[in-house]
Length: 261
Length: 318
Image (tube, rainbow over all chains, first blue to last red; front, side, top):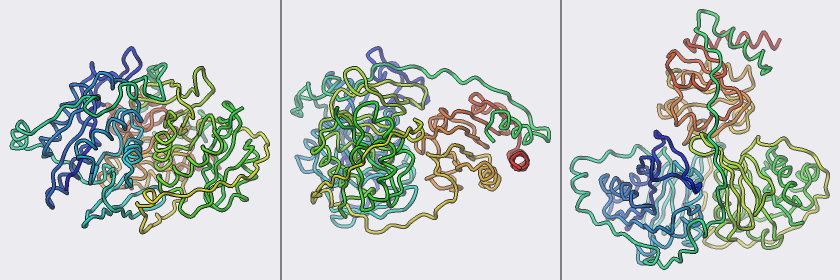
């Protein structure tokens, strides 16, 4: 089975994430990495590939530096990469991004994807909508936010945990699937994996290669626009007391004074 | 004036508070109209009327439920086709966000999720969101109609404004592909007597410092009438369910009061709670970064501090 994993290169949450002058996410001046939540999708794909005959293709859409996200997935064990790079994509919203991803997935699978895996959300935009959008564009069933999954023949089954219930899902492949961080820890690249990744093929495609018009993407092709961003003022640190046997009483007094009781 | 659709959040016709909030916001943009999915619309109508829904579009079709995004998106698309609204407001949730995403692709409308405010703006519906672990507040404009916005709970006080809530049935035929993913079994989770985490006015959370014993955290939560949250460390250790996780990969909460017990305050956790109105922390480590955020902090052992605070609150409440 050919498994496609869509991943995103994101600014490191440990760094000082911010916006650029044009109100888009600053992807140039903040160190980036493979979105942590996407590692779970890569791991799930590798497990499936290892348990049967399978090949894992990693697809990303992003600037030149996004090649690092592909590299990490190849080091973990994915077989090949596809990197869609085009200046026109800069500033795309989720819907425009899903359009590019859909065409990239089609091209990477000669028009017939079998299984497309994604993470729960990117750690920068955190909308959690692109898997659903991609399923819509590809005309495939969506089975999302799974905390466990299995493939048996041409059917996928899995479990999704919500606040009120644990739901068992079933769908016939092909399908678009997203997984949560409850799936099991992603592996670290081994030394062997890091060396092997250097020889793995990575294709670089432009919008023209995908037959996507530049006007359909970027800020022009997006239905939303950020008009301003404001750093949240740092919270003023309040009173800190050390417990000397009366910490709980003082806490309750604070709540009383703050009219929270 | 164009209509603004509001997807009703309800359990068997019992309308939730966030629906009243969305109807209140919808009035700023256009004429509010509700979209009700299910068969108990009569139970819901009085409350929808009270908060200004002129019409109630009803999708009563067994193929459309609140648990699958693809059929829900097709139902919403059918209502949009009939009503030609300026905007669609949905409560933020895992399924509603995905349905909103699919609706954006179907209609070509612009999508914003997790908004904390919505208003009429120049050049389109204006929204406010948090970004980057709530370190930024972002103002956006939805430039393509219909504007599709999911809104977080507890962001606007509901204001009543009586309207007719005229029922308008909408026929929906769900496509085969949308029906292809099926739920084969549902195991309901034990219903907690505590408030729901994202809707709660008060939240008390435990982390690594609990060592796995959430007893004192739960006791304090109960005396305050609070929901119980957990840090990722506590969830990963298997001490508390994932559905209670507060943080970047869990729930984002913004209550009146957030009490962090034995939680260091890593960026992952801050992302889920730093917009809370008042923050209190208890931690043994005086260097814990959580103390940078607090209005009141106690450096101490939560196993001593919490039981004493629980008794003191009990006494204060009489």
